Length: 342
Image (cartoon, rainbow, N blue to C red; front, side, top):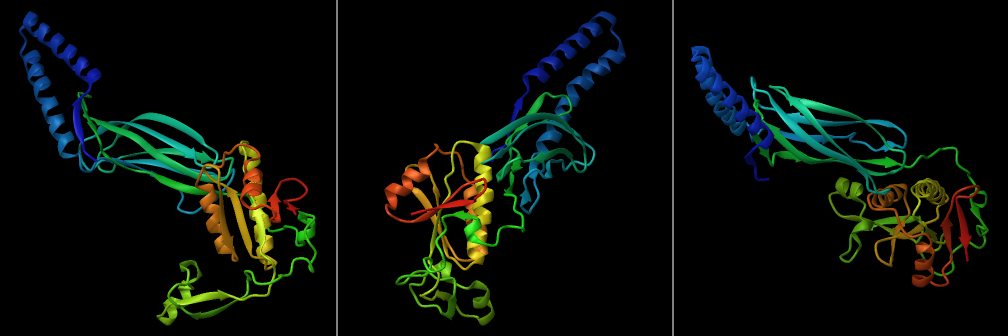
């Protein structure tokens, strides 16, 4: 980023007024002390300008958030750390920063004027509490450094943003039976495959050109020194289509994320492969196939990292238009976490 040094209007005006007043007093009293003050008023801004300019590469700001995901309504430290490489020179800075939840669309912006101490810098501490799940980003929008006299302003200094995933609440004490979790869930004899479909059971074989990258078993490949893939067997439980009907209400979307997390965990524990659908941008559904818990966490991170606000009823209309006649579980909240739609 290009660094620019410019005059600060407010600081320049104050300096001109101070210099003019001192010059007037010197003309009136002809004092040597006032003459020395005039010389210092000329020299000090020059020295201050040089110190600010030679320090430009080390001045910067970065946002710091927890490096692991956190839960909702949990206090997390958000720090804005401002660096100063000079050992004996301090600066002041105007920092404009924001923290936003991409999933809910919430954004808060603040501006702070701080003293940047020598040999280390300063820090702004902010307690962050997110009521809803989503990807929370701390972004430094603008940072400006000033010399001691506030005559010169340095713009374009390095700044680094940060983010953290706020995860939906989940209790391990969930229902163990799908019939008590999903309305009208098909019985065991109805949920068996007819023909060929995906199956959570798989076998390991060596990679063949044309295999999908998502089927590669990376850990085993690293151990054996050759590419190995997981191939799913036929004849198992039927794949379950799950629709996440995100809408316009932030609180309702948060409850739906809790439900879809618990529901998909339960389906995967019961060895049902899951095809998850959710509304994307435009008029098309996004989808993701999963058969393992790790894949569930990956897709939830993807959903939480995008806007979750959509017109109510969009997901159901898109599902009917793109997949007519397909049975699916629609995620809901309340007594049941989902309803089986035939």
